[in-house]
Length: 315
Ligand SMILES: [Zn+2]
View 1 (cartoon, rainbow, N blue to C red):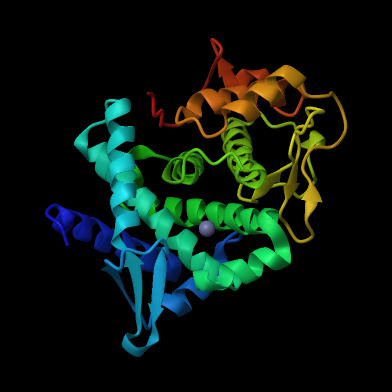
View 2: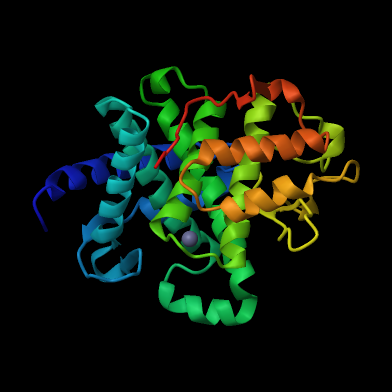
């Protein structure tokens, strides 16, 4: 391993420790408890280590050694990305460490949730793709993202009150982090289902934030909607539709009838997906939701969305 990787190793071990505690502690959580219990069953008998195989695969299961081995290259890229985020928004070293812990915890939970979802091993991905197509994979991804955002937020709450963040703020921030990890670790991919995953995360972050401000008009949404439910956005296509599947039991349509979305804003948001400046994209999503009567315009203050903590990655 290269120089500087000792720090990385330490950060990774700390994040894994948080994940272990979180999945053990939150098996009763209403939205992620069942998954937490399954993750706990995976993690308890196994050690989690870094490896340097030079593979594109995120992790390997080494049952002979009862080990889960995460490829160090990806962990290194996450650390670099979080350093960029912290630099761009002039966050302190403490804030950079907090971001890195949240991002690593989300990454580990996201990947292990794929195990729970039935494809632990990336060698299975081609078979799965043949069966369910890119959209199916993106749905599994956005579901893993939301579970990871919630569990990583719960983990953060256990650390000294998480710098005064509420669980709702930590969850919104982690959704934004999930967007950044998805969009920036594999940039320049404008495949439709990847964009739908990104858009779903931004819709979730916007609605969760509006909900924490008491500004969601619930009569415009699927009656069972909760901020923790994964959203898989429709492809706006040429007709500017703005809606999503709620991946609940049963799956449902998020937005019920009512005012149409402003087509130009939907087009602009779709075109800008993948940009690092998540705040600006969430603001656009908020304006669309407001025009549709889904959220109240009180979430905008002087034209700016009231986010819990800024995660702008300006370039
Ligand atoms: Zn994934």
